[in-house]
Length: 128
Image (cartoon, rainbow, N blue to C red):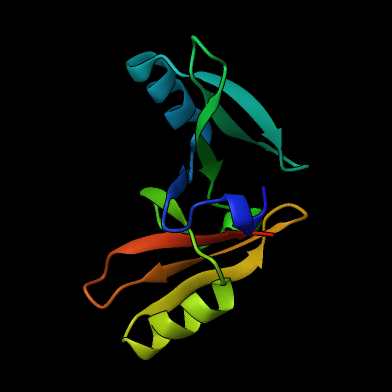
């Protein structure tokens, strides 16, 4: 999807990154009914959590290792921005900080995790 037909400022995805993703995968499968689908990280699997009726991916549950080392252990929303670098600079100039990234996510996407001046975190996401 290109920027021309993609809304910015929209919550695009949500991830949970924790030391034991398999345990939380099973927890949310039982509590919510999500169906897990493995996402290979080579040495281990992270998980896309699928809605049972549609099979659509609704969230990710990831291990806090490899590329996800240092990610905060909480549900993290990914919000689409028009220009990731510009949003990062604005964040920094307004007293926020970058706590992870920016880094590539697949072939055409980049993201980073920011912390606002009050301490709350979110991911900024850009897809070209």
